[in-house]
Amino acid sequence: MYWLFSPPSIDNIVRLLKAWRFWSVGALVGALIGAGIYYVAPPPYRAHATVLVDFNLEQAWPQETDRQQFYYLERETRKLEEIAWSDMVMEIVIEANRDVTVQELRNNKLTLSQPADGGWHFYADDKNPERAAALASTWSRVFAEQVHFRKGTTDGPNSFIEATQTQVAQSPRDRSVSMSTYLFIGAISFLTIGSFFILFFTKPR
Image (cartoon, rainbow, N blue to C red; front, side, top):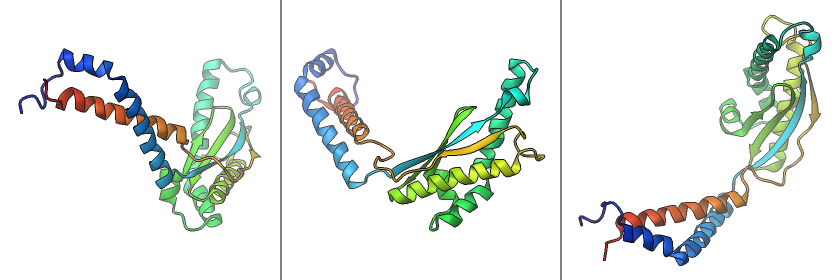
């Protein structure tokens, strides 16, 4: 039993590198396992809507340096993110889409992806494609409305900032993770486990 956890020998490594049948069959088996998992427990559908955010730097900081504009963008972006994830926005989204909690929205259903200036993408994941589209559309719309209501206030964004919903979410046909990703991960995982077993658990001849 001393060989169970002993370091792999040169012979084991050479044998593994030459085992083209193992690599071929292992990749196929792993991919089939990944495809099976995809069909048995598929990932949710993903919908997305877009809001165009314009910071209007020329009007907000007409004579300032690039460094000051950078800090302005960073500060205002943080304020906008706080609005997007605020309790008020989440509660309005829940009112329009029942049977979901704030914790679910923040933990695994909603995702925000945005540059500092330009299109902000609001993603929603759900097993029901229509529900995913409704969540993304409502979230992006409420965000744009709240930016309009709060800008210029004490804790709100700068009064020059504009947020306009430019794309509502459509019922998605694609899921949040593609099948090709499952196939790739399945193949790599199977080959990795198989290689580990051959190198560390195979009794030397």
